[in-house]
Image: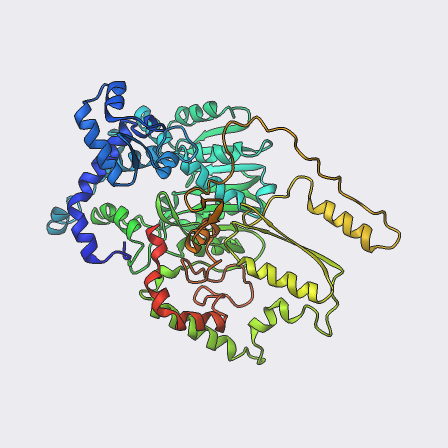
Length: 564
């Protein structure tokens, strides 16, 4: 919210309540599912039994929001509405928005009364008595289907350990759709869904997913009940608030329940200790604060508890999820890393650049032995050097959508190796993430066999079968893969796109490809000198010079990604 001036926020405020009612009503009426093809207001009103005149006004208003496009005398979904607001599609967000909009009233917030009189806590028992669990279960399913399932799948698929995950525990699973998405993603996965809500709600989700033989439903309290063991992955999504004051014992239960090398994936708010942000999490928890219930998890709280419980590799990042600005730590049992802070922790562009400048000065000052650690860390200082024994061959594989490193890094490595006489091949895999999948017919093991055959005397030469050209079109009725039409344009045979849109594609699931924009993570993927207080990527004096020279251009863009 800070990206908007106070003036901009205030002049829009009178319309926000109406805006929410318009969008919520459109979702409840399922308007967007009926506008996948162009319809006039009269056609839609007639098909749905609505008032024709008022249908026209509603569609026109949704058009001003960018949800619909006017085509002649009719309307059709915009590209984003088609993706996120059509019921039953993989990225459907409507159920989630409707659920959380309705639940705003579960904790009363009469701000004036709460400030003048004080907290008016609602007893937990009274809240439970007010719940219709059958209706609540249906709403829970709506809140988890579609986009939230894709969101958790993206996180799990990007884990280096994803290929080794066989048994999953989803604690506090609610309706269970998130855990079911992860379990159902791989044929030989099984798992346990655990929550206090009536087990028939969760079992109904299991049966609907066709996973009865692979999933066990347990009704219980993850804070007090035994979790079992032998898990490769534990999902803890939006549950850490229930462990406030006792987070370390829960983390120890998680640690003991995991197999060696297993992963705990936590999705939780990370509110600043001084309550300075993020704005959406502060707003969401304000009703609880004002009613005397501090349930909000603080930034770094999960990581500290995990470390104390015995986890030794902890990677955390701050992401804009559909549920708001969330911290997503994942922990396993092998290496040490740090925690995460992002560019929102800097109040201004100038403050961030000063921190960058200070970090570079500290690195250039050298360690206790006088070494510049960045120079020691840089592989370009060793490739082709006089005392270096170069490898015969190297293959570099990077995902094009992997936002943790610039693609130029891998390209510069290849150039340096080629100049040093190394046989090096680079592959940028389209839509690949942090750990790209192997391409059928071009696997890494095949490449090893080919290089062994070429460079080892007496070894058999291995050749790959020639590509067989297709002579007929396939039978697919719809396009598959990542939809680029929102940011790539094709005009008169010429393809064009903006750097901002390309960057958004590359950083959609990670945060370090473009230092300082939008997110700077602390200590991740650097087990040498990155800490929770100093950014390990604050190394490059050339980048600092760019920040300083072009500050007039870059400063207005600072943290602007939070508006996306």
